Image (cartoon, rainbow, N blue to C red):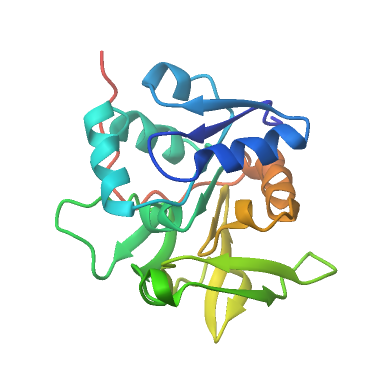
Length: 210
């Protein structure tokens, strides 16, 4: 089934910039802050921001269980920066109460490229794109290990920075800040076929509420 409503998790971070790009592609978009809104979307963007804060807000909003279930059911998702951290299988330097949802087989390290002052921009080659993409890295996570089932679409200094596994795409950078909508277009195309591909879902799925 082709995704018709694209949600953007809007608890914290750069969600508005993602929504503007999706709107610019002529898509129906919805900022997601509640369980009811989550149930109305056919695909989701989890934006960059502060990964520990986002994890806590998912708990406080009551979204963590429903979000995990929908992702494990195959909801297509694009996670950028903090979103990549949240979707990974293991956060090597994460807090004990920080969620790693286990939807893409990656071991990641938060702020792996350094602090805010170490933020940088660079052009990267991406599989499936004819021209380089200008990528913006802000306190970006480093992917230290990618499982055999992960398709690595781009690297920087040997480290994966854009990956895909089934209905899940993740970027270590902020594609919403580049002025280039091609990553979002890749996600839209992936969302169109993602429902036919299984999510790996390595964490226990919370039971459905009665």
